[in-house]
Length: 108
Image (cartoon, rainbow, N blue to C red):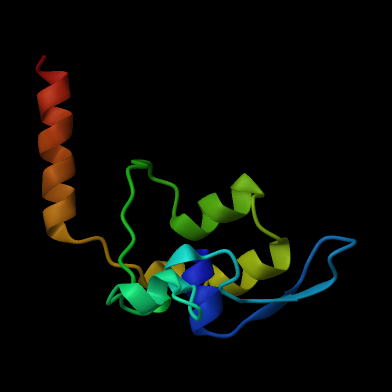
């Protein structure tokens, strides 16, 4: 999700040494490869920033805080993208499904 936001907003950030200044890009994203009969040329895919993200982490930590606490991405990037995380909407269908799954496992 952080990658989607960074690419959508065309962010740049200061990476840990020796990386220095970095810019969002889709390098390494197989769905966005093009040219010479790339994946994107053969399949009608939507844009990377329009992809829907799902997950299975059930915890009360807000997404932005969890991203910061995990220390997986550069701090400067996290600082820029975490302001978008409160805008993430979890569908009520997803919450209903999660309750059903939890109920199933609790009652076993």
